Image (tube, rainbow, N blue to C red; front, side, top):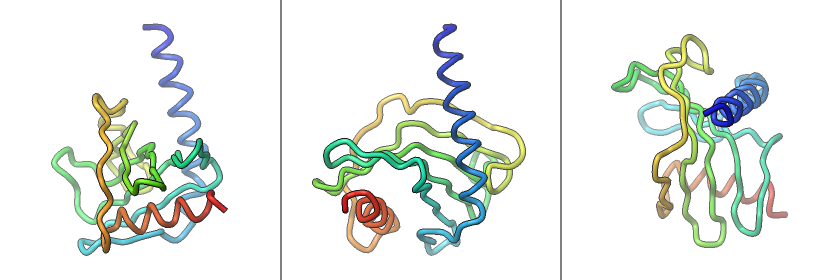
Length: 133
């Protein structure tokens, strides 16, 4: 339990430090409802064809949990054009403001195919083109 607490503290601390810069940048994508998506390129890494990146969503409307922003650690598989979310933190205000509603690892992260003409397609293309040069 002590190791989990330490890991959680490190992840939240790193995400908070990186997120301050993300709020000042224009979004990578915006969906039809007005939700904006930011990818943080400073901490982006890759192993083989998989890109690891932090994503910030500023929701146009509060979700069922009353969250207005979601910070997620996302993996993009550039070769097979799929993605999965590994960690999520929901915040009560945009740009990770307000209180943390919920935070933790995704219980069973599964790869999801990315479809053409979707926000996720735009995000995958952006992430893969930035690091696969």
